[in-house]
Image (cartoon, rainbow over the protein chains, first blue to last red):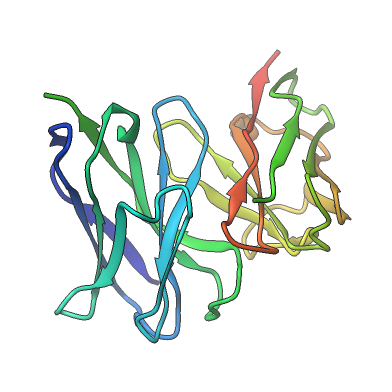
Length: 121
Length: 107
């Protein structure tokens, strides 16, 4: 059974870049889309974007200028970079796989446990 | 963007009660809707996709219905483990969007 594990700094300073890694185990990267979703404390869920099996990324327009999702060199890792962060970017960040292998809009299957990132000086 | 609106935002219910949660889309999305359950400190878990398809391992007391702009999630007989927050999500177009959540609390 596939498992996803997010990792990265828990504290990032304002204006800096938030960088997280999702390590995938127990399953193949292909042919799925790998998403990042975040949840500010006590609030709802926001889809940030995905990277598909061809390496093509798609982002939420609300964040498109600041977000980059990529596949790591190990090919079992998915990375998230979010530039120029502010306190509004404080959230639990989840790595999430589509339920099925597809790059159309779809629903989410396996989720990582999430990692809390706080933006503060 | 397709806006998803859930109601109520919270509901108090007792074990054994029938609970109905509504999700409305700002435009027609066919049956491209999923429901998730989230317990405190945990990641969301997929319950239903395609508006009414039960994900593997999900108890049959959960049922989804609806199409286009109006959807419902029904829990036929609330169990202690069902106290959680529930989210709908549209999968008809990008950006993928979620409802604001419905918290099911113990009465």
